[in-house]
Length: 312
Image 1 (cartoon, one colour):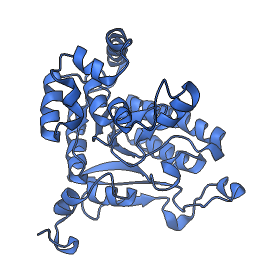
Image 2 (spheres, one colour):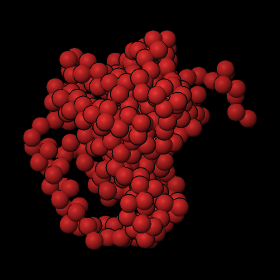
Image 3 (cartoon, rainbow, N blue to C red):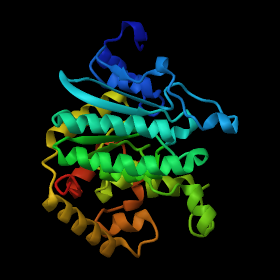
Image 4 (cartoon, rainbow, N blue to C red):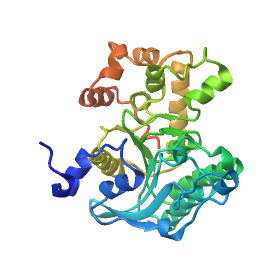
């Protein structure tokens, strides 16, 4: 029988809490050392979007993102967590400014890592221009922070995935950890279908969506560096591991990353399905990948050894 939450230690709570199901605030509280989270620009400051009221849309006092700092296994860390349950975690002006400010603060200090818990469908249509500008500012802030020696770690496993501008920002991070739920793409399934037709991509085919954009495929491609199970504790352990593994950022790493991406395009550019890519990669019985338990998949991914960490 599972013990009541009030009787659990923080580690036990983190182990028993689904990252996918949890709110952004719960994820941060359990990811960090107990009681260490200090929030910047919290709900009590009422920094809401100036645009949503115009469209008679509900506001949220933290504008769908929590930023702050705390301790991770005793060491300081800056953190940001998007709330996928508010407007799909979409970026707007205030939402984006909070993340940009956090990254700039990390850049000035230069030694404290940043953890970004992505959970977003992209940019809010109601704040399109402001949202797009926010994405550009965040990407610049990520790269400036990394150039200053900051390790920027992305964690992807929320309900809304990591789409649109979120996918672009994730690609700028020092390293990424994903769960099976961690879908990453610039364009979501419905967007592709709307613009290219159902023949190009059937958004109702959930198996197709998951094997094309899901965490297992991203890990096997090298677009993510670690694969985690769904608990908050698994993501905590992945974050600690990546902070320890990420190397220095520089021109040589960027060139290596470019070569890796060019090779990926050469090898897999003509493939029509993820299963083809897995087969070309030398994976036997590639069609069984979606059903593999986490421990077996991690062993397979480690054996394939495709990672972008060294390049980044």
